[in-house]
Image (spheres, rainbow, N blue to C red):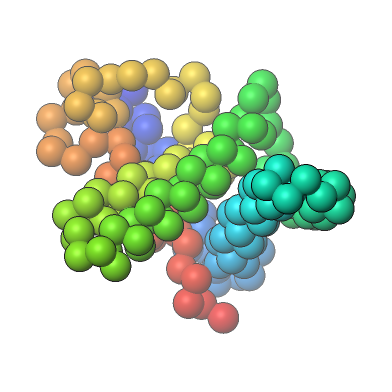
Length: 179
């Protein structure tokens, strides 16, 4: 229970800091959110250059992939300033997976498969929220252990577990509509 309270206190502390910094313009999370979406698209462009190069056998696509990769790495450094171990790669893959699940959800929605689309969108947002939780130091990589039912810990009795709590944090802290 103490660990759950510590995690919830840490989340609330972050929300308070984010709200205060919006007032004093010390932190612009809405720009960082825009940047994270741009990075998602750059990862996607890398994939497309790879597959186009492989399908056509033209090496110029690999050269373009390399250039896009360098831009993506530079931009990712603007969000991921301090990391340990494999948090850099984890972060990149969280963004990439979030983008892909969003695209799968959109395609399922177009096919009239609303339930599958909703599930893909929820999973996409969970991964996106985890990206922010890791990179805003709300949780550490040590906190990423499997707890049954996606709870904060074994004593968490709420219906919505850690994913929902992280998603709520992103909604409260990052408002892309603030200019």
